[in-house]
Length: 249
Image (cartoon, rainbow, N blue to C red; front, side):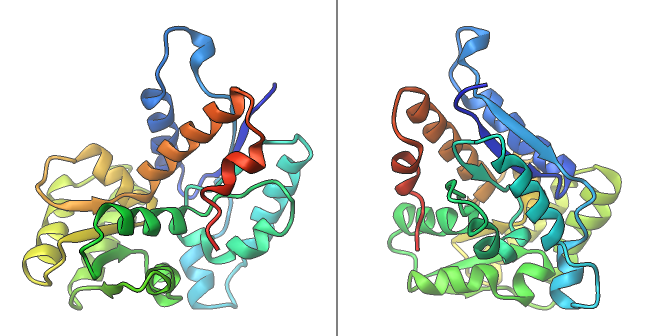
């Protein structure tokens, strides 16, 4: 197969399925050959990211991802994507394993926030406890001179219920709970824009988009960027040149 990219997924599987579904439905097609070429590594056995980030005595998820990246490197993809926000804890280590471009979903999303909402000086963030605990998104947002609003102590339990109890454990998106979280972040904590810092939250946005709030959805953004790059490369652009636009430092 020529001109394909590798998806390091399975964290979780239903969220990865959402990313692939966005790819397949957003690319413009007239025939089978118009779809994108990609290899999906749905590594559902990657240890829990938040558990390790909060407690380093827990299984380290880096080694599973390292094996996935190196295994794909042998096949020669044009670039990598990893539709899991919290797994970007090891982004720098993983990207150094190979010279193949490795997109950073978090940085791409934060830069799109700045471009789309240049007048907003802060952004609401809902995410896994792991992403918040290690300041993964907070650091990226501060790098572009913006501030972060996390909401009050009632927000994280609601987010955890949506991510873990509903989506990861039951495969169910509680649209009403998702909307209630967005409403509280907007009405009670003044967030005109809310960043969805977990791909399960991106799944919630895909399944329950009928709300009036402005969201930055990294998985949706990553899908659009993946399509853009894959088509440029298919049409003859060098992969490193195509990806350079999105390899923010």
